[in-house]
Length: 63
Image 1: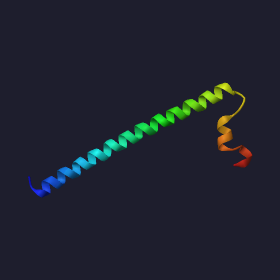
Image 2: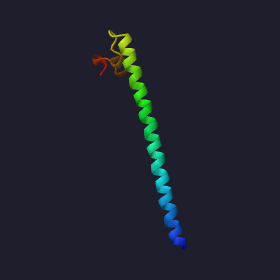
Image 3: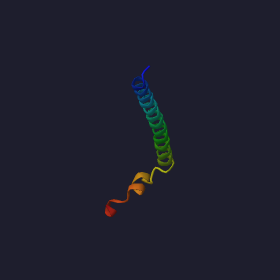
Image 4: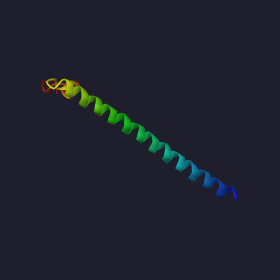
């Protein structure tokens, strides 16, 4: 195998590794977001008269 072919193969391997790492990061981020949404829904379910998301975003008069 020539050095040029070996370098090409190594670049392809690196690209595959980078893509796999990106997929794993996306999976972790998706899990984290799902957990956060579940938490917000739980808090809203036990405090139905408190607009939790409005408290985070600010009131309309503050916008």
